[in-house]
Structures are given as C-alpha cells and as structure tokens.
Image (cartoon, rainbow, N blue to C red; front, side, top):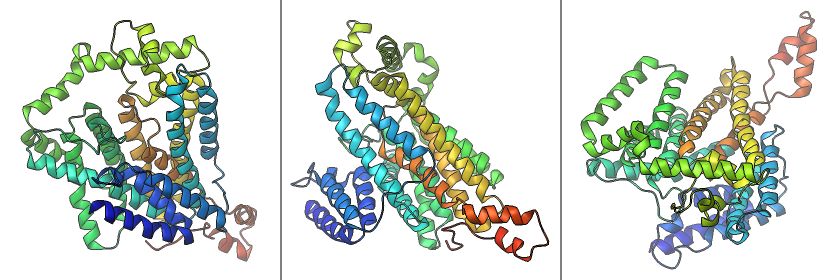
Length: 444
C-alpha cells in the first residue's frame, strides 16, 4: 500500500513538474533528503525513483523559458571549481574502481544544488525549499523525539536505513542543522496551528539529538543553541528555557547517556575516538605524501592505504568532513571546501548588513541569521562526521547565495541615489534613495 501511494504521488508531482520545473526541484529535494522510497516494503523500495525525478526535472527545465542564471557572488563558482578538482583528482585515486561510483553519487548531489541555485529566484521559491528541508528531516526528528520520550531514553535513535542520516551521529547533526530553520518558520508563518506545530516539534527534535547518544551531536547542539541565544532578542526568556532543558535532561535521561557523554573527557582510552584519530592521521599523511592529490572518494578507508600507515589495524572512516575532504581530495580540495564554508558565512554577513534598518526585509534578515546559526552548528558537528557532501548542508550554503542575490540593490538606482545624496536639494533624491530592492516584499 505504501509503495502504491508513493509512486502515485510521484506521478502527480512529475506531471506538475512538466509544467513547472521548480516543482521538480522541490520533489528532488524531498526525495534526496527524506528518502521516502526507503520507508516502503515492496516494489518501490530502493527503486531509482530519485533518478526519474531528476531526469524529468532537467528535461522540463531545458524545455522551459527559465534560464540557467546563478547568483553573481563567488559561492556557486567556487562549488564548480571544487567539483572540477574532485573530478580531476579521481583520476589519481588509490582505488579508481572503488572511488568512481562514489564520484557519480556526489556529482548527482551537486547537480541538484546547481539546479536549485538557478531556480530559487524568488522569496516564495526559497521559502518552499525551507519547508521541504524542515519537513523532510524534521519528520525523523519528531518521530525520534516521541520514541525517546516513550522509551525513557533507554534506546538510541537512528535514521532511515541505507541513507546518509541512517547513523545515529549523522541523524543528530542533520537535526541540529534544521532547528534554526524550524524557528524561522515558526516566526514567519501566519497560521496559528502551524506555529503551534513548530513549537511542539522543537523540543521533540532536541529529544532526538539526546536520544541519539551522539557526543558530537550534543556538542553541536550546545554550540548551536548558544549562538541562537546570542542572536536572539529575548535572551532572558531563552536563558530560562535553556536552563529548564538542561534540568529536564538530567532528570529524564538514564545513567547510560551521561556515561557516554562523560567519555568525551576520557578520549585517550575511547577506542572509537582513537580510531578516528588514526583515520585523521592517514588522511593527513596521504595528502602530504601524494601532494597535491588525495586518495579519491573513500580511498583512505581502503586497506592498502590505511594499513600502509597503521599495519594490522582495522580501517576507519574519517569521521570528519574536513579530514574526509583532505584525505580524498588533498590540500587543494580542502582549501576550496573551506573557502566555500567561509564564503557562505560571509554572504550571511552581507545580507544582514543590507537588511539593517529595512523592516520590509525582516524575512531575509531572520533567514540569514538562522542559516548562519545552522551552518556553524553543522561545521562544529561535522568535525566528527563523514558528511562532507550532505545535500541539506549544501542547500544551506546555497541559501546564503540566493539571499545575497535577493537583497542586492539595483546598481543603477543605487548609483543615482549616491549622486543625488551629494545634492540634498534635489527633490527626487529622497525618493530614489528610498527605492526598494528588487524582489522585496512586505508580506509574510
């Protein structure tokens, strides 16, 4: 029954995509983030449904009047450079037969990001993608929170099997990443019932992070909530809520949870942490020994590579987006990856500066603020996870580029305003200086 419902729904969405290409982009995002085809049990399970959605979306886009125009800031082009380097580096992979299939999967992810960058051309489309992210990942956050409460926190929460967020640590990082977006929608949604739903889902998703028993997830959650508190305008209220959260955690979670959290301070004897440190050393040494190339996708996990540096030791994934990129694509790849990360944060700073004193751009200011908080939360959580090419994270980086474009002043009008400002006696000066940015809207 689930299979029939999923396929039937997709056929309807694909029909809409033929007329409106962006509907396909949203469907593509839903499929890749939520993985609904992994929650069925018959003919649709594991079927290449996402590929069908991608194919129809690309064909519809090419047949439409929409043009492939990216925002003018450096971020999209840095992503292109990163993809080009990863492709070139793959020719020098330690095990090409192992790495090229993973390259194919990564390229599909970036194809989705590039198409999203070209089609998120309005506030409405950007908001629609925010909804897709929150619903797709938030579903597992709410579900996991209910499970944690019902089980008394005695069992770990995991994501959907055979997906990038199937692991408890990776699910926690994804939940931490979307919590600021949940808050954003809660603030910018008119319907009171939807706002109530967001308010109820917020603590449930925090419960999922705690129920995952992910040490990195809890650290990322703490950093994200601290940044959220610093950016908020209701510091006293949120401080009290944070104190209640900490108190409730100590009252509710079992001793096993605190035992696992306390192991963070005893890393020298934690075998999992030692394995990660070994993997980080393998990534670093391989990148140095084979400069400027890396070992290719998941190349440092191959026995011939890992055991060259650590003989008679079990292989271990990098468990760090930074060492993952370093080991797979060398120092040039890591440089581009970090440059993209910094550029995304820089974009949010530009947007916040442009929105200052402009109440009609409150939505852009709030979304930029929450996107910045979400990105930093993921940057922290990702330091202990192999999620370097996670779709949801890359979409957040794309958001900063779109927001920068949406708040960009018209160059001609801006130039006229500056010239007229030098002559205050000009009657039209005040009118031109107060002109709105393209795409602005007061409505929420």
